[in-house]
Image 1: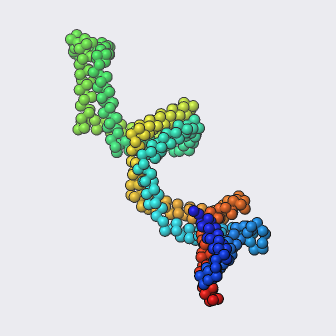
Image 2: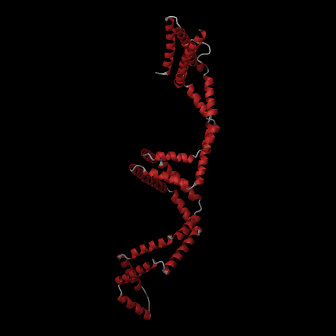
Length: 412
């Protein structure tokens, strides 16, 4: 039973009780009950009138100073908005509250709870895949291409070339490059075709020698003992042996070769003509249509690789999301100054947002209330506070009944 029915029942009970006492024989008890029911009936009717007058005209009669809520709708809305803006949600209290919050901890705790949910992780990975698929690489590639062109046009590449050479020397890239070249040379020298080629070249050059005297006799005697196959095998063996020895770190010829290579590279790095040609070549290559197509192809390859990884991790439950979240949190903990800067920036942004949009709270409340017609507004208020007000009627009837009993005693 709702409170309105209880209030109506209490008023009806007082009325029926009063009428019943009119038909009872005169006695002390009848007089007391009649006085109690009469006062309770008066109190119940008075409180019914008072409560009803807040929301509407009692019995539909436009009695002055009734339907108070609708008559004072504007004042009530203004008072409500003023209370919210100046008391409940004023800028100073919101700003003070934000300044005391540890926003990083609050955000990280909220995200941690979400990350622990498997469906959230899978939805996150699915969203990332969708976002990557919809990424307009066709419009991104020209942007990167244009930036690359401007970069080479405006950039002095000589410091870059020198930095690359110094890094190569420091990291031992020159030795690794030499070892790779020696390895390739050894593999080439070990081929049967190389042996035959070396034999033919050497034998042909020996026959072309024009040496007289004893030296010529010795050369001719040597040629008589040799043929292309023997010469090729001999030269091949010496070549392979020499290349193998150059791979040893303690070989003096290796160190001389590296020294000479580094000197030549340094000379080229400081040669303005070479640098100018290199920059022109880079600008030409960067500005070509093939470069833009190459960039687009690489972007598509990268996207496909990332999407494949995300799809695989989604099937496994989204562990990547947890790892990425933990990595981010741990990284932020190692950079307290940066974290503090971001948190301060976020706090300033929120405070500024509140200050600039605080008035919208009142505008929003007013707009929502203006959308309600009188009947809907009254029904809403009765649903929210009408229940408590109906108890006033019940208490009025009961208090009136008790007061009536007391007054009847005094009357007697």
